[in-house]
Image (tube, rainbow, N blue to C red):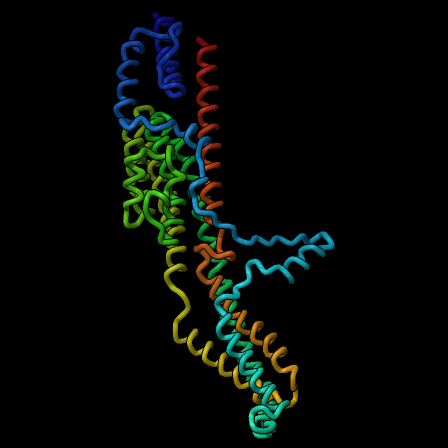
Length: 399
């Protein structure tokens, strides 16, 4: 009687473990009559729980394709601190990539045109005689003081843009970490229910893609083409049509967490509540990361500050040729080209970095972050299935 009870328990555990690994129930030589009677019902329940019959998640992640995704190639500069670094110096000084030239093209051209006008006026008689500009030349000493004040305004502008850039990167990193933790918690807390576990991991992979689309205002099936196979077609269409894609993913993650917890008949109520609480906590971390990026993307610097800085900066550069034109002569256009590019370039760099979630060459590589999350979730699922497989083999040897 004791041997029969022990055998019943081992066969029951073996049938549960084998069902977790393959979804086909226990092996024939280890099948107990009670387990064999319950196995067809378990397989049928799993089939009903996934009526779309989408690709298994590990296969979908291995076959995941980004060929239809619009390419984004940001300029990533990582200098080597222990090398001579000649190449990186030459690259950073002379490379045209990554420089915000278009935003300052019009004001720079205007300043250079005024500089040429002053050079012709002071060095030739084409404009009715050579201009002396004695009155404006007396302002040269005061202009140096204005340069210091303007420099402080530009430095503050650039500093705020850099802070926003690194805050955006920190929020994106928080999102990646939360996705890793959520997948790991799902493999632990929902090990008894592989259907809901895999479905939750599918939406974890979809969340960075949805966040990227929301920040870039992308919509339609093309924006989620890389999730084909990872999500069923119906869910893919629903995600593409959602007004706020990240919230749609959050709702599905919470739904799968609750459904997977309710099917847990192995653990006590306290353990189930603790597991659900951990899943909800990591889901909140996803929302916090997405909310931080949304705040940065939707809240640029106040218009009053930017308008005042640009007006002051443009007036300063346009009046400079009249102050130093007589002293510089034909070198005035060259000097003003360098000064206007340097000072207006700081403003352009600030604009390029303060909302780093778009398609610019200095924006964050959000596509790469989506790939990292997909790769990490795939590794977590492989580890979880390998662990369950090892437990199943150990149970078979014990039997």
